[in-house]
Image 1 (cartoon, helix red, strand yellow):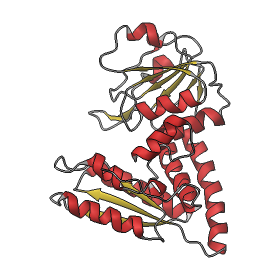
Image 2 (tube, helix red, strand yellow):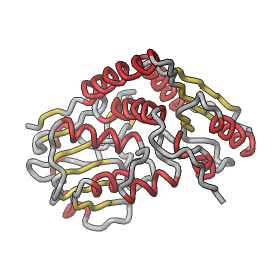
Image 3 (cartoon, helix red, strand yellow):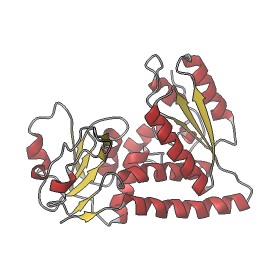
Image 4 (cartoon, helix red, strand yellow):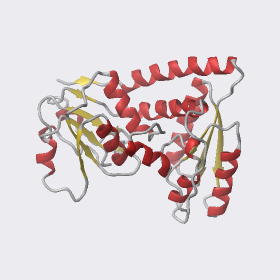
Length: 289
């Protein structure tokens, strides 16, 4: 029977530590401020922004919300981002996805200054992650790595499998594990013989977006199973990409949904904002052309 990895508990520990750090910064006259941009009226995005705003309030970070009309043009969005880039009192900027299809989200991510890119999606930060340099890392993969660290789960030399190749989770997750000397395989919709790959994995990160996709018969005894998925069922309940009940019988460690990776994503965002306020990364903007 697997040990349940308690993401809520670890995330709370992180937020408590950050709150102490932010309190000290305030004593020295430094107020941390974070700007979040949402375009349109996506209900899921509203919930995510509410959770981020609540976490900011708990830690002691000021949060400015910019809710833009779904019909805005690209220039208006980029003008707002550039204005926030130039404001010295704004330490972090996040563009909530998805955004309307007529807007170019990649151009928007490129426009966010790398030094304020607390979501880790600017190509400068993506490139630095690949090179193993100090950078902002996408919050979900960063949260997964923190959970593995907190539970003293060995990564070096292990066979790790990431199911899903999204820019938000799969690809940065691959790089995070590789940077810790795991041997990493990334699987996707075109992968053949998935079962052969997963049954040889010491660590599996499921980020495929399909409910209960990874079942107990797909993993080997003693593997570590990390479930990044959030899928809403017809009855309104939430489940992950892993069939938790069957997988927990064979895994050594497993994350639940909810209460696993989800809380860590927000906690690592708060951590990135505090990191940004310290100005440890270069503030120089790289041209997007």
